[in-house]
Image (cartoon, rainbow, N blue to C red):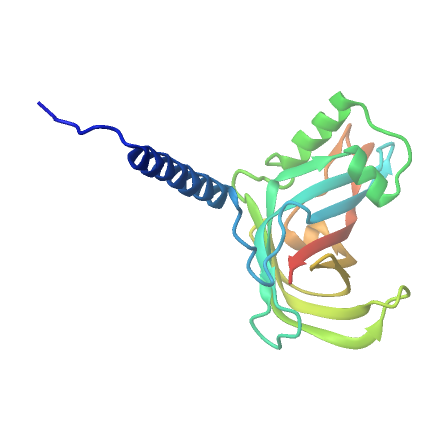
Length: 226
């Protein structure tokens, strides 16, 4: 049998102090567990980075705005080589969201069923074929300042590299505006591309009476951590 001695005031104090110390350690451990790690320098903030695609119309078709998200990446501004990469999650590309239409500047809205149909056609095997090509990657060879500024007075950089989309790789060079906001840098830019250059046939239906243009305009806001 376990024998215990009398409980003295000193014993009570030691007992209470031990409990308080244990609770303090537990609270610190809990708080430390929920604190997120600091983002890596030059890494892309995938929660806030966006690309918006303007899709023109042919025949009796409609103009569309597409929203796409970034899966991962990093950009090292000023590097003459190995300047990073941007990996796009093609399965997230969604047609005619309110956010995308605002960003592109398209008026009005698209009903939910039509937007779902357009998105399904875009992601399917006839166009992007995201099952076979779930990601698209812009490998950035250099990210050098141009020595010029945007109209808003922000520095301009030129990103040069190779863009892999739909199993095809093409060279890509574009200028971006670098805007510092609350410890991050927003890289904003736009460029045009042809779907056929990447082996994609522009979508059509009704014997070609309804369709979209070969030329697309890509607008991006890629956010990197400083």
